[in-house]
Image (cartoon, rainbow, N blue to C red; front, top):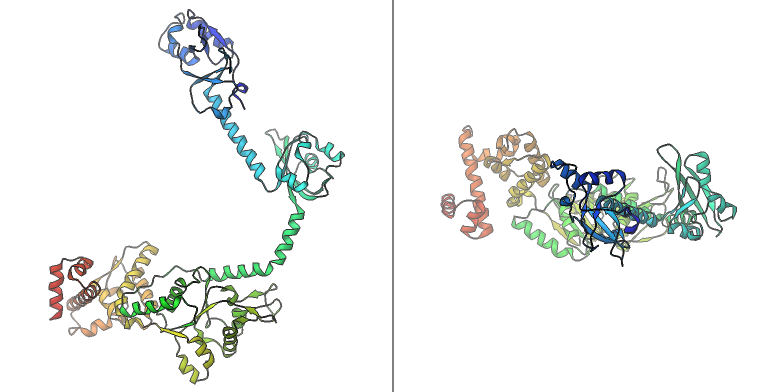
Amino acid sequence: MRIRDIMNKNIIYINSDSTLRNAMKLYANNEVDALLFRSENFHDIDIISKGDVFKALLDDYSMDSLVFPHKNKNYKKLIDSMEISEVDELAPLFLVYGEDSDRVLGVVKAKELLHMKDMELLSFKLESIIESSYDGIYITDGLANTIKINKAYERITGLNRNEMIGKNMSELVADKILSKSVTILVLQNKKVTTIHQEFRTGKKALVTGTPIYDKKGEIVMVVTNVRDITELAELKTQLEENRELTLKYYSTIEAMKLQLVTHEYIVAEDEKTLMLLELAQRIAKVDTTVIILGETGVGKEEVAKFIHKNSLRKEKPFIKINCGAIPANLIESELFGYEKGAFTGAAKEGKIGIFEVAEGGTLLLDEVGELPNEAQVKLLRALQEEEIKRVGGNEPIKIDVRILAATNRNLEQMIEEKTFREDLYYRLNVIPIRIPPLRERRMDILPLANLFIEQFNKKYNFNKFLSFSANACILHYDWPGNVRELKNIVERAMVTSKNNEITSDDLPEGICTPIKKRNDNKEDGIMLLKNAVEQVERELIDRAYHKHKNVRRAAQALGIDASTFVRKRQKFEK
């Protein structure tokens, strides 16, 4: 849209000897946006706006005072052929000139210009939305005259919109361009209507017409959405052809959702843990089978995740299956999947197994010692031949999965008892990793406890911490349940303690028993706390010096000065 399309062409000149009264009369009797003063040089024009007149009167000038002293040049110049969008400067008024003319052709107010720019931008956005729609869009007015067609309509129908714009729908039906018009049905029934429509080009589509009402309840437009049912049929065929792939993705997502847990950081302060992780990192780069051994709760799953995340398969799935948590009659179908109708109660579309879900990634067989004998046989065959067969299926399926196994059972003893297959044991036991129990890596205990404190503070919005006495109890307890037990005890103490400081009194009685046994004076509570504090100080000073190998850095890590560190260390060494 150009400036000439929106300018006010009413131009009135006023003499310099006119009064404010004259200006008021001119504004009252004419639709003008400004009064112009005559000038020999038409490019050097003065104006007086309505605002100027009102301001003069408010400043107590009489109606008969001259208007000339109140003139101004608060305007900018535009050319009538300019596009509205090209105007980037603002002024209260714009005087419009022709390209080769010295005379003013019109006046434009700033608010009108801004309004038209907004309308033009809105029109552009609406046009872009309609044109970018993948569905065809056909718009008529309330009399069924065509006013808008998008390019998707041309693609779907094979028709040229330029031949249809401006024509009435009844005319298009009469000329057999369309088989029938949903627009006419909408205007007749005054409701949303859907029909199948055929076009002169032989194409077919599903069309839905929607009436647009004005404030009086009259239909002013009908908007029709057009969908190519040929494309829908092709999509349906593709979905049927890709059913197996879709099923795999679905099963993968479900398996991942079941295992989606907050990442646990691996704490490694103890030398034994550091050596363990160094070994795990080295073997992570190769695809050999690993069996992870250790008592319950030592963190076998976390080590398995550590191996996966440091492997070449880290971008692929990490899937865990607990062999001891699945009923014996279902373990085979969980591992290898089943075909539709394989057994009573099976899903009608079948199901892929964990091996296929983990394709390209890592599969952790947790509690592998709990596998029933029949499942052990089929697992051994899958590992040896690198292929599986679904329950009820005949076709072998190649697999590419790295196997990690984990157990807290003594598999060698189980072999002697004939409850675990020897050949499967040697197939899994390529590289064994034994995770020491927490009592054998005591330097990890307090860092783990502090990690759990930090996690639960964030989870429960607490600000709690362990006292010296609580640290002493935690440090000297043997933790038969290992890391899992430590985490549970820390959480219990945090949610049950009354104060921010968690003391030994907030811990279960059995946790502090080792400390109490060390104390000769068991009935003296004050001495017990003193001994506990000294024991924690001794442990922290030894750990800090062992880690930093330097008095200054060790003292800095503990937040004390070097002289205090030396004095306390000498005291504990006596």
